[in-house]
Image (cartoon, rainbow, N blue to C red; front, side):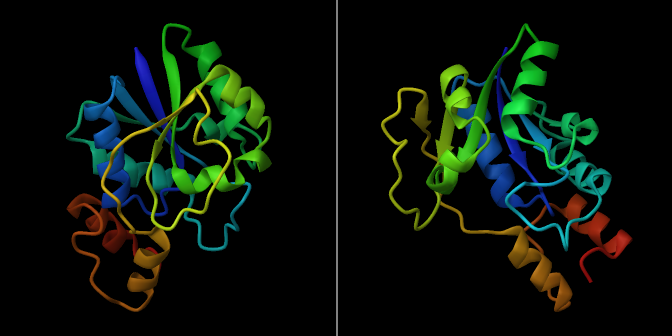
Length: 190
């Protein structure tokens, strides 16, 4: 099976993430998309980062009705911060029957050369890119392993959602009803 891996903090998962994942799962040769919940991104501070199990639960609730989308906790047992190449290697070894593709926003290519062993990622894995607003020029657009996928151009961020919650403003339609209910239940981001 050809599986797209969508890495992220998902703090919280929002409609933009879901639209991208569903577009990849239904408009490309991918049979499934797995959300890889990252305990800690090496490029981000984790000051407002919820516990990984809570973020995992939100992803699980958000995708419960879509059999093409799955969630993985593979990085929870890895050294923090986790690096994409290490996770890809572990998944490829654990699931030899699958072919894995990295899904990422075009904006990530701008700093892609700073990723651990980015050359190995390009050597062994395809990258399916979705457009991101105002992305500066980068050197990887013509790489044979990089494929651009037409997807809606969305500018929704988890940071924006957290800020709205801190200001006690409504987040309806930015996250699924299930995620909104879980955030309210746990009083997250207040």
